[in-house]
Length: 232
Image (tube, rainbow, N blue to C red; front, side):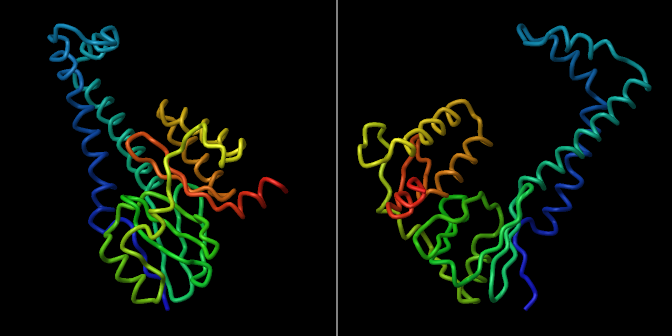
């Protein structure tokens, strides 16, 4: 069976290809005019930069800024594609691609698949979290395909009751896990999303699944995996 792909629809792909460069071109062309209007505001940051842009005039400046806007729009389009999850499903396995990573999961290795808010989550046979990434595609369609191919799809997190709010004074959690959760808390507070994502992967690798709710971390512990990984 040929892989069934989920992610951006064809129309959404066209929009991502076209809209940012077009907007970039329009903004670039009219940027000096916008800058002169912004200078009328009573207070603004980076006033020197805005004054410099406002001083540009003539066709040559507009064309150059238009080109710069198009380039910036193309870069934004590429970034959107880079950050968008693509899912390929067939009878035997699921392949996921996002950023610079590509992972394959066999059907028999998966115990549950579900959407946790906007995140697509795969859980293994040992109740270990194997995958967790934001998914922006059609949720009803992907659920239907997973079910039709015999995958263990759930409409909600079947392990919800096993999560508890992380407490730095929880003596049941090993010190090494506390250290990672503490580091991740700092990343979340400082909007360091890439590092926070990596720390969540590190935690999942040692048997700790993490949810973020109202700026708080909630954890589900696989004690046997934790003991195995930390005692290696």
